[in-house]
Image 1 (cartoon, helix red, strand yellow):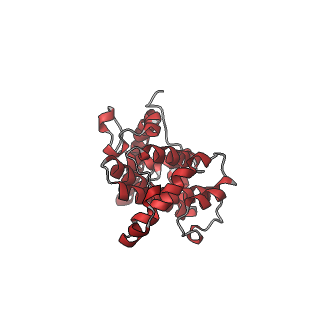
Image 2 (cartoon, helix red, strand yellow; image 1 turned 180 degrees about the vertical axis):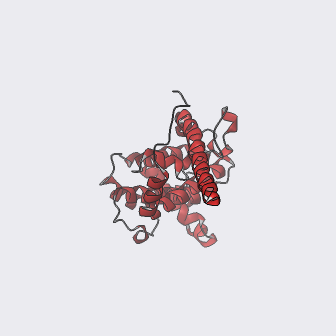
Image 3 (cartoon, one colour; image 1 turned 60 degrees about the vertical axis):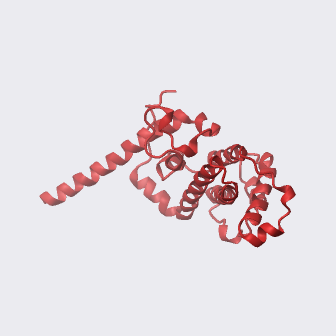
Length: 225
């Protein structure tokens, strides 16, 4: 794949209108991206308790984001019990993806979230169920990228609107793999899209540079007038 041929086709005005119309969707998606990035950093540094807490939050927010992207009438605040499997029942009626293979993992996330939040919760928890593993980030990656691909917004928006690209890889991805932020290390699903992300990195930089140039030109015109 030629990584230099991606272009951002959405305009400033279209992006503004989408963000204005779907403000909550984009806010949830961005918070989910940051939780996901934090969870991977924790997994890769053997910080399993916060890894589970952040994973649960990342998935819960991304499921809600994906549901909202299909159904504008969905109210995420009504589902505050943190049981992700219940949310997947709603998404199942809207989505083209079968998420059932992830349910064992999401059940573990839910129990982990309840167990690891407070000291008294940890004392009460049945520790036998906890199958914490340093490779659990692979399950997280698989589920998260299924949700990200299912996220029902224009493709450009997934990249240009403070997208997953910005959270997993700091700054434009130009050059070799060593420029990746540490949290993207070993992420198979991410690496499958390496050229896609890299190409959009160049396109995003060009997109915002053109916008800065337009703003500067308008300011100069106003000064001349």
